[in-house]
Amino acid sequence: MAAVDLNTVRSTIEARLATELALSPAIPVVFNNMAFDSTTEDTFVQCETSFGTGSYLAVGVNVVVGLVTLNVFTEEGIGAGSNFTVCKRLRDLYNKITVSDVIFDSPVGPEVLASSPEGKFQTQLRVTFEIYEEL
Image 1 (cartoon, rainbow, N blue to C red):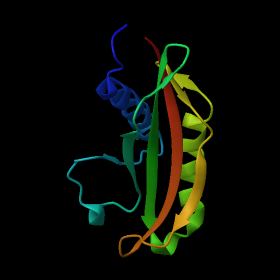
Image 2 (image 1 turned 90 degrees about the vertical axis):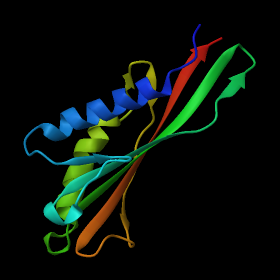
Image 3 (image 1 turned 60 degrees about the vertical axis):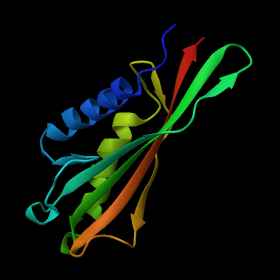
Image 4 (image 1 turned 30 degrees about the horizontal axis):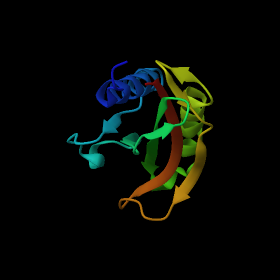
């Protein structure tokens, strides 16, 4: 069996997120290495997808573990409620589901972060996932 193509996995995860956030109310989403001016948007979501090293199980299965970190930003004066509403949408999107052989665990968060860009309120949601590949 061919090795897991991590670029395909990343694009699947990011496409699912982009599709959800394009729905009403639409929220801009920013991915790694993407130019974005945060001063032009009141609310936006930053997505970072990372992969750990694969570990081989004794039964001939390779397990690749990854993490999707979703940072939700809103204007400071609006309050935490709007961030938590966006996080609820994202939790529902990735909560204990399987998408294209990617198994998502329950999301962790939302967690309010102290170090946010000036004028923005930041909340973070983290989702781990696993890909099982038979050798």
